[in-house]
Amino acid sequence: MTQLEEIHLHFASNHIKLKMEWLREVVNFLSNIKSSTDKLIGLVYQQWIYSNIKHSTEPIKEFENFNDIFDLPQPLLLQIESVTDIGTSFLKQYQTLVQKDYDESAAEIGVIELDDYKIDAFEQKRIPNLLLSTPPGSKILLFRGTRINQNIIFLDPKKCQLLGGAVYDLMLQNNSLHSLCRLLNIQIPSEPRSAQMTQLEEIHLHFASNHIKLKMEWLREVVNFLSNIKSSTDKLIGLVYQQWIYSNIKQSTEPIKEFENFNDIFDLPQPLLLQIESVTDIGTSFLKQYQTLVQKDYDESAAEIGVIELDDYKIDKKFKCFSLQLTDGERIFKAFEQKRIPNLLLSTPPGSKILLFRGTRINQNIIFLDPKKCQLLGGAVYDLMLQNNSLHSLCRLLNIQIPSEPRSAQMTQLEEIHLHFASNHIKLKMEWLREVVNFLSNIKSSTDKLIGLVYQQWIYSNIKQSTEPIKEFENFNDIFDLPQPLLLQIESVTDIALLFLNNTKHLYKKTTMSPLLK
Image (cartoon, one colour):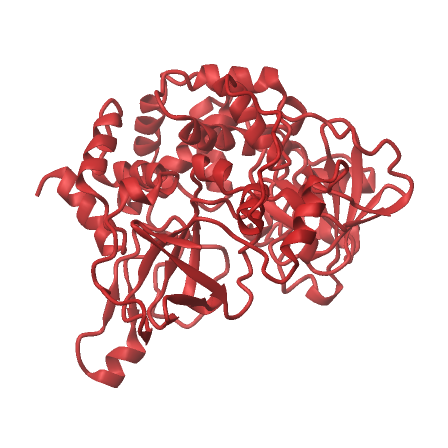
């Protein structure tokens, strides 16, 4: 089997039936990057997730008549063309959009396309991650059992998965204003966007329309850095986003100018993008947390680089309340959990980006975080992860000296990267790491950027080649609770209920493709 056929088979086994012509073109485009098949699969996936399904993926042939009423007999991959709020008058939404001082959150880009024809889809129950701002071109995987009735798909949160992605042309064609004008059969108002807009301005506009106001100097530098990669604007947007998410907001993003006085009490009138500087547990004594960290036999899960997750057996969960320091690049803001934010942990790395939605309460320069009114975007800034780890933060709060650390000032970049991964429970093989760093040597970048690039290589690698096996536990036949975090790779997933019930071939699904599973 050729490498091309192997990649095609891998995607097909994960319900993505790529067009061979498109795949051949992408692999040729990536031919200057010498890499194994598993690495190439990761790169092809990134190209596919931002591609238009019309060009990249075979249309559905299994179901000739969608007009019947039936439950989907097998998983199905579709592309979101647009998202519309049918719970609010279209005219009211249009008036909100075109008034001069309209809230930008009302201008969010927001049914599913089957290549040659379209199918409407409705939420049967609320899909947690599906928003009006879900970009057109996002991919969605419908699981077996999804109900289809008279050409209409009923989406159930337990029977579908948003994979992400976007298609830039669709984001311009199917933004809320254009969609509403088509629905209301009225002329689209003239827009200030120039037809002669440069690629740089187009990328800048795309991020600004998604509430990320990039500094033009930083954007120009990044685009120049990526100039050796010949790609369309929509592909370049994805690459710029990866650079931005790991950048320091001070260097990359314009500070807030809309709100001069944060000392008032008000609800945020439009979405706001901030960076997490540190996370602190104010529900537990700082001294108790410090003693937990510095004791000799503390759990290694409390030794992560970044802001640290303390042992849940030592800190009672019901007393946890997180306080955050947020910044727009110039000013520092205090933030508190008004209600528990599900994905916010003490181990959330400093430098992570957070998007606050309209309606977030701000009182006397303090932001109150509500899980329904904010979204963690991820990311990190390596310098902040070193400066604002839990031990350093607690020492500053207690006004005591930071204990000496074993980290050498003369550490090489390779050793520093190795230490960073090891402190996050990923013990890389030095030979593999050296090979990857050499492979990336033509990209001149700081250690924190290089860590992000190495991580992308590792997440698509086979753990056999890249990561040291477990040596801490000689006998897994004993009964015990895991004393420290453990990194493993999923080899396969089996539905044992189906195996026992049917006593026939059980459901067997390889899971090496999805980056969500490692």
